Image 1: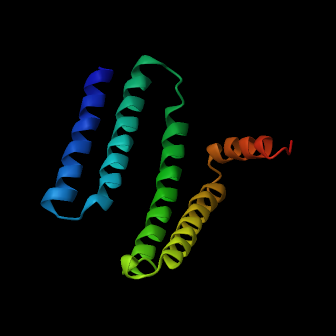
Image 2: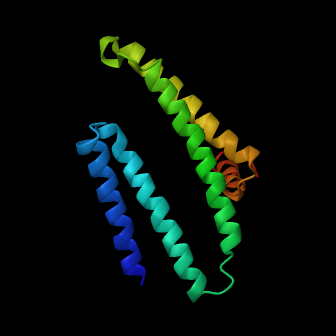
Length: 140
């Protein structure tokens, strides 16, 4: 059953990548959208399958957590879209220093929005991430 679900996720990836790149001519930028969509579908299908196999898999908690992550991803995508429409517009016409600066600012704001939204939503992975950062930076 797991193999069939993974094949379904791969088919979602193939179809979404075909539609975004070849059918709608949105370019390679949208390949990540297809990959993300297939990962989301794969997680959802495998979670449903695991609920029937492993009782007590905390399906409700996982679903709530997944929706929180999805909300954070929407915020991140909004920053990326806004950056592409404003700061990164006519990207190749600027100097290398300007390009590097614009990318650093856009990536920094996108990361800030993503992690900030996860912190505000009290996503359980944020506690794990914070613990790893504190351990790596030498703070206990």
